[in-house]
Image (tube, rainbow, N blue to C red):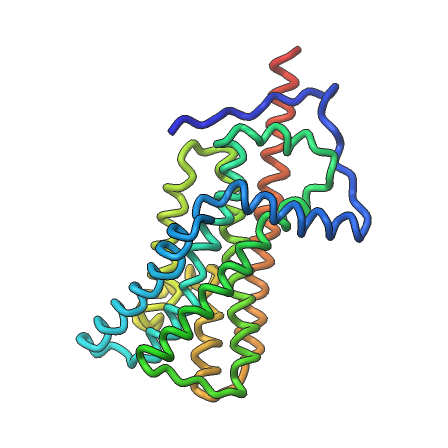
Length: 281
C-alpha cells in the first residue's frame, strides 16, 4: 500500500509547540488519545477486536500449554502466566505502531506536525488506550486460563498481579510507540512490528525458560518489556509476593522506551521541518 509522504512544513506555517497547562494537558491526553484510537487503530470493529486481540492470544496460550505437556519442559503455570502477560503485546505493540505510522499512511501527519500543542502529552495520549487494551486482554486471558485449565491464583496476589500487568502493558505500549516513530522514516514499519512480536515471544521467557537461552539472548531479553513482568507474575502466583526489584525493572524498561519514542519523534520532526525549509528555498 503506498505511503503518503510527510506534508512540507515551513518556518512561516509551522507552529512552535507550547507546553499546555495541567487541565489542558489532561484533556489533550484523554480526548486526543480517544479520538486517535478510534481513527487510527485498525482493529476497533468487534469482529477484528475479538478475533485478533482475544481469540488469538487464547489460542496461542492453549497451543503452548499442550505443547509444553508433551515436551515436559515446564508445568502448566509457567505457560499460563507467561502467555497471559504476553497477550497484551499484540494490542500494545501494533497499537503503538499504528498510533503514529497511520498518521502518515492516512495523510494526516502534516496536521499533527502543524499543531501548536506540546508533543509529550500528545504522544502519551496516543499510547494510553493501548495500555488499557493490553490490561483488558491479559485479564481476559487469565480468566480463560482459570476457567478452562484450572489456573489458581491466591486472592491476596491479585492486587500485585494487576499492578504487574498494568506495568507490562504500559512498557509494551511505549515499545510500540518507539517502533511507530520509525514509521516516519521506514516505508513498511509493520514488518518491524512483526519481527518485534516474534522477538518478544522468544526472548521474554513466555514459552522458553530463560535459563535455557544463550547468555546474549538473556541479556537482550532483560532489555525488552514483559520479561520482568512475567517473572514477577509467576512469583505472585506461587505465593511469593510482589518482587519489587522485578516490578521496578519493568517500570524502568517501559520508561526507557517511552523516552526513546519521544526523542525519536522529536528528532524526526525537526528533520522533516529542516528538509521542508530547504525544499522551498
